[in-house]
Image 1: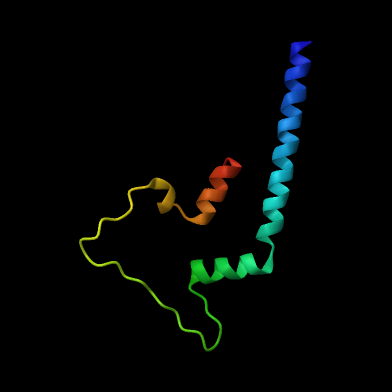
Image 2: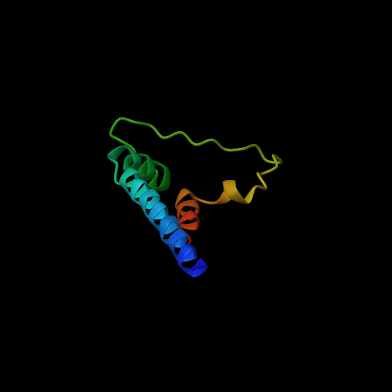
Length: 82
């Protein structure tokens, strides 16, 4: 009996995870999300826009946090279990 309950809990957890993934997929197909990612990843710009780069002064300690050094896609893939 406990095996059945464990499997039912696993099914429920997997179904919830599936719904979360569907919601994330929907946001990733959103045009605003895609534009933001294209601008950040590929430094794309619209005609007439200017890109500004911020360069940290030498000697400034860089962030040691592993989470901030990962790209957005790396963080997403990690959350998805890849």
